[in-house]
Image 1 (cartoon, one colour):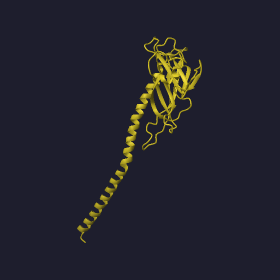
Image 2 (tube, rainbow, N blue to C red):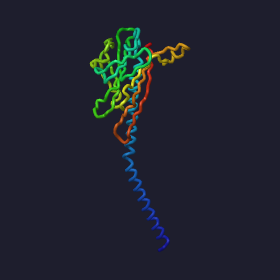
Image 3 (cartoon, helix red, strand yellow):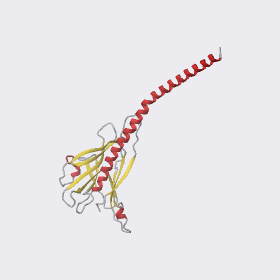
Image 4 (cartoon, rainbow, N blue to C red):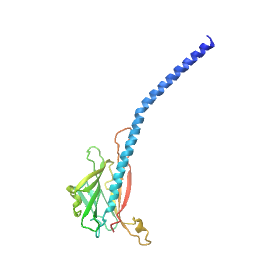
Length: 237
């Protein structure tokens, strides 16, 4: 056999090997396409949903700082009420002591609008059992007053008909039995803390709530972690 024919045979073998390798690479890419693309879609969904939940969570939790705003002689256990239970109609008030702290599952608060008026606005935030009986999880609910009527006192917080409910996080990991703490005499206001020797102290609410499991299905298993957030109730003494 001539050298030219040998070269042609070698070239043909190399070409066939290259085609086989190329085919394998194409097949591998096709096999990997589905899980990789699914994971990217999951990550995008997690990012979008987590941002939505975070914005709702931040707004609702930080709104509790309005407690006592514009109210003449605002008071703990009146303009901020700590409760335990499964929501309005099934709640019991947890007295917040003059010193020390108390824990509960929900916080309801009120403020005057406009300031120094007798018209109060109220809201609440509570961890309640999920509406899905088989989930075993809780959900975080924000309570909006149905009608601004200037009441918000007494057992207003325990009457279901007074509230519209907005679910902030539909499925969160089961929390501790008392994820909300109100502590008295906290040096939590930067302006008050700057007064040497005699800082101005206020109650502070700490929410120990989990990040929502925003995407329950898909390629990844999503974890939940407890996130403590403290809010200074600077309108209350």
